Length: 245
Image (cartoon, rainbow, N blue to C red; front, side):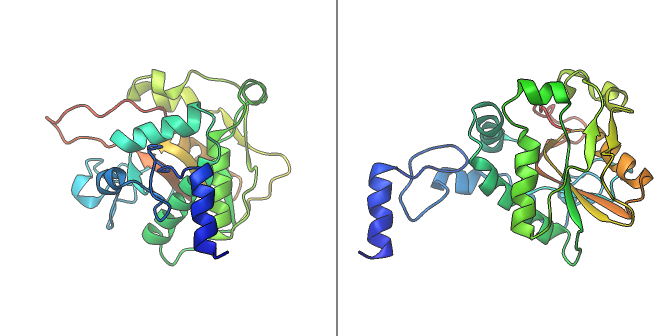
């Protein structure tokens, strides 16, 4: 039996679905045609401070504590639904393909850079007991595997806070101030860290984590996320609500 025939037999019993929207697709594809044309990709060159494509950048180069940030997609339409399936519907298997998307964005936007470790935004101990999994940790692990870099628990979250998506942008930085610290057994001195998370909105959480890592001696901290909440230029429609960092 040929590999192609075997693949078709498997698909007959376990139909292949689009990894973004879940629609049924033919065996030769991994993404449906609708998503393929609708994916809100972020093409280079991109602003290192906000991660938007240069044509979409409205951040006025406001400096964050991380050195630069990148993402494969904007958090709109099909990607918003994809994130919901991954984070809230228990579809942990999506981490592998979404992590690969993050890794591809890192190769594209951070070309020529190498990293010593991949880190993720942690949960508190109580959150870990309540939640079946940390989406950011799964995503970071998959991205690290694709990049050939170890994924390490470099950070700890000291106490719970209000969820970022429930707060206005003006309160998000204060909400995470002093919340994270470097794990006691983590060695980050002179290390080049890639910090991975699922969504970036204001960047407050990523910036706070990067600050802590640098204070502990990390030589650089670059951030990579699956999706960035697209900010509109003045006078444009308000961006979608997002639940990211």
